[in-house]
Structure formats: structure tokens, C-alpha cells
Image 1 (cartoon, rainbow, N blue to C red):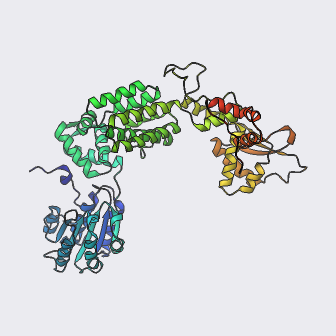
Image 2 (image 1 turned 135 degrees about the vertical axis):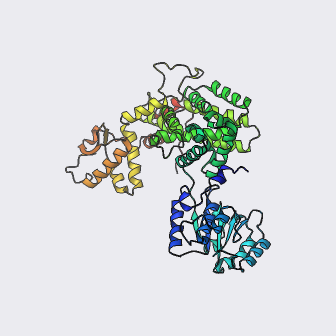
Length: 545
């Protein structure tokens, strides 16, 4: 009879367990030091090896050559435990044996000595499903069990275990397997089975398993049955109902080229091919998460759940967008994924969500609009990346820059002095340097250059009123963080009538506008520019409190 891969390659010793080094080492040391607990809680995601580890512990303690950190695998006890046929290792499924009567029967069983082995093991799987009454019935036995009894409670929901039970057991949290670890294990097993598998095929299986090695092995078994002795990425995707990688690339390209028509055509094709739109949205969420990681962390292999070839493709796509763009797209997709869970009109929700991605490409942030107001009025950015009705065609020389171009400009050009000051002073207040922030608000001039920030204070006859060396060092550190490059800070004494401090320009504009009335408020240059940027907006009389 055929043995499935998940059972055929189940670890028989601690050394064969993938990952979980913290648990293996602790149990080995406990066996060698003869510090065996009477109760253990193994918690973690499905398929991470909880029940397997419980059986290995039983095997190590009941081995004829033991107790030993590594069982002999030759004695009757080792063989029977490996085949789930040991009389003294009792496995209970709490999902179907969860009541008080089942636990009473178990409790009666603990009174009898083992039939052959040193210890009688009770492995309770899905332990979190036991009823409250069942836990109460088990409590006293678990607190003071006979010396020959050991309990192992396996659960995927450790928070559901009563505190009175958890306090009487040693708890071990099993880690999820990483992407590269799972791919490596699948490759090893495929080679052992004489199967040729591409890296893309194994990556698809790993992503579908979501950290569960058992799920990955079951899927590998299914893929071999479908595809034979050679596994290709496209064939595995089709088997698992996963949308092809080209569909993800199509979404990215449609966003980049601001093409709503291509986005709608893609959804139509996915529907006709029978793809599950919620699953596709989940793929998009993972893809844009990887794009964001590639943009911010440089495509770190540890953070990116992708094959080497896919990491190169992600890096190229991530360069088309800013971090702010990708964050906005991921937020839209996560909301769409949540909506699709309860929607009876999956296609309509998907089309609407993907069109939002296209429209979000045209938008600029409110910070850039305010920055345009602060920098002098008439040169502020437009609200969209093209004129109304112009479509996504080629941009003219007078058209506003794309988000990528704006990001490059922000990194290379110094910010307006007023904008820089309005960022620096709140940071000082966050660090508790309120007095220094108050002193900086008295500055009468600010100048931001490529390598320095010059702050001017009114002439008062001496330098005693200027900030000290430690304060100058702190300001240089904060200024470098804001500007993204190393700069120095210098204090100057200037004529107070020769300069105006542009600190917190937005607040200054509001204060000025509030002091004016009627037509004088409307004629303020920053208010006029704001109205130009936001057609249809109205200005009301400021309310004093």
C-alpha cells in the first residue's frame, strides 16, 4: 500500500526535525539531566510538527536503550510508536472526544501502570476544544499525576488553554517554517523521490502551504500525481487554482500606465477562466507586500517570500513606484480582500477595487499640496497626473511629474526652509526638548543648503542667548534624519528686520487669515493658492475659542 510523502518522511529522531531548534535542544537536555516534566503544551500553527515531537519524546523516554536523547529505532517500543501502535502511547483527538465523560475515562486509565514501557503517554491533540467541564475534570490529575504518566497537549490555539492548566505544564511554541527552509526541504524530498522540480514550482507549493510543512508535503504529493516526474511552475499553478504570474504583472503594468481598460479586461479574463477572485486578491496582497519590501529593504531574501528569479522581477517593478504609492495600493487591496469575504458580487467588488488602484496612481499626497502652498503659491502641484479627460496618454513637457519623479526630486533637492522648520520643531517637542523648540521659534531666518542648515537669531549684543554645543549636535542629528543626508547646523546673528522666520507656515497663514476679515482674508496669497488647488472649496470666518 502506498504511503503518502507526509508520513513516509515523518522525522524519526530529534535531529531530523526541520527548524524548532529551541524545542529540540530543551527536550534533549531535559532527558540527559533526567528533568522530565509530567505535562507539556505544544502550541503552534498546523503542520509544524507538534504531534511528531510528542511521539519523538515518547520514543526517547520509552526506548529500551534509554531514556536517551536519540532513540535506537530498533527496539519494539521505537517501532510501535513510529507505527502508532504502542499500547502505552495513547493519542486522543479532543475534537471528537471533548466531553467530561471522555476525560473521566482517561483519568481512570492513568491509575494503571504501563503495560511494558517506562511511561504511559497521553497525547491530546486539538486540546483547545475540550469543554470547561473536561478541563476541570483533568485539572487535579494533571497537577499530581502518577509518576509513570506524562501528558502532552497539542493545540493551535494556546490562548484557549485555561491558565490553571497552562501553569501546571511546560509550554513550547513551535515556529512556522520560513520560505527558504520549506523550499529546501521540498527539494530534498523531490530529489529522494526521483522528481525534477523547478524552483518556481516549489515556490508556488510553499506559498500555498503558508508555513505548514505538512501542507506543503501533501501538495507536493498531489503535484507529483498530476504532473509526473517533472514539476513546472505553470502546471502547479493550474493544479492549485493559482492565477498565473503574468496576471500579477498585468495589474502592476496597468497601474503604472494608468489604464483602467486593461484592468477591467484582466478581471473579465480571470472570470472566464474560472479563477477565484478572492484568492487572486490574496495573491495581489502578497505581491504588493513583496513589492513594498523590495522597495524599502532592497529585496532582502529573508524578508521576500519569492524565488530568485521572482526577486529580480519584483525589484524591477518596485522601482516604478514610491514607498508611499505601494503602501496606498496595499491598503486598498487589503480592504478589497476583506470585502470579498462577505460579498455576493465578487466581480463588481474586484473591478471597483482594481480601478481604485488606477485612480490612486493619479493622486498626489496632501503633504505635497501643502508643501506647494508653503513654497510660494503659484507653482504648487496639480491634483492629478493629467488634465481632466486627457486619459493616460504621453505626458507633455508641461505636465506634472510622475510619483517616481517627485520622489527623486524630493531626495535630491533641499526642502523649503519653512517646511523644514515645521518638521524639526515637532521632533524636538517629541523628545521632550520643549525649551529648545521655543528658542528656535524665535529664530528670524532659516536657510537649508546641501550640506548645512543656517539658523539666524536676532542680534542681542552677545552669543550667550544662542543654543549650546550639545543642542547644536542634537539639531544636526535631527536635521540629517529629516533631509536624508549628513548636514551641519550653524547659528547666526542677523538683523531682525532683514528676515522673517518661516516657522510653521500653515499655522502662520491660518493666524494671519483669522486676523483679517472678508476680502482681505481671501486676498491672502496662501489662501488664494489653496483655493486654486481645490476648486469649489469655500472659506468661512474663523471661529475663536
